[in-house]
Length: 64
Image (cartoon, rainbow, N blue to C red; front, side, top):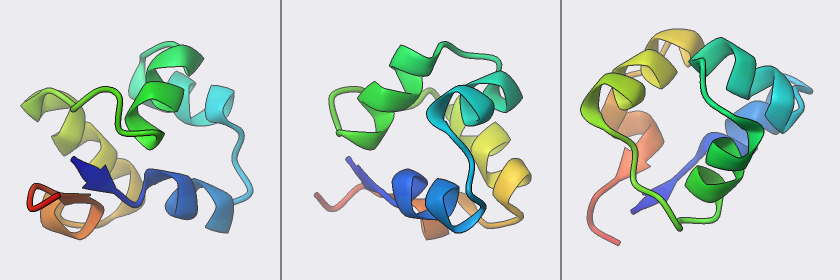
């Protein structure tokens, strides 16, 4: 699943560790999400959407 996490994180000048802390996951999980090795659970996708103030569809693309 493609996503915009890396770009959104970079816009805010956050490290993977900073985003991981906000999502309550490990930095490795953020890395796996950003590289497409891991698809987020629905609760994690909702949490990311709340953090960035966007809809899930604006962050994650299931057409990949």
